[in-house]
Length: 164
Image (cartoon, rainbow, N blue to C red; front, top):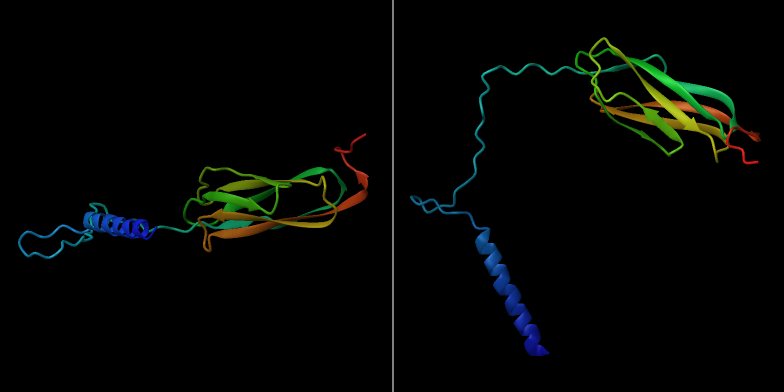
């Protein structure tokens, strides 16, 4: 047992030595010092254009569906304009659960142009007062913004998903 342990330790030291030899930097043939990687800036023939900033201007950032029946599926379009000076690109939209589903364009929205984010809410299995944030990730200052939907679900009457 002791011999196996010693053999295992020697084998590990040997392998470690082999691996470290492969990771050593090559030597400079004239100075004997290890060569160093240098970052060399590349000059562009064309001057870099200033990068602008995109910005949302929503008609509303919160929408209240009012009172709905349990099982109802409701939708609302949040309309916005890009008031920035660069194309607005929505990279992702996050919701807190699968009951809230956003739809949005993946195409850039030019400055001065409008777009919309359609948010659908399925109230099946939900009850009471509901507030659902929808987080929009885009190339805007701060990287994200939040819009919200609200509703109150009537628990006494079930909507179109009622089982009979």
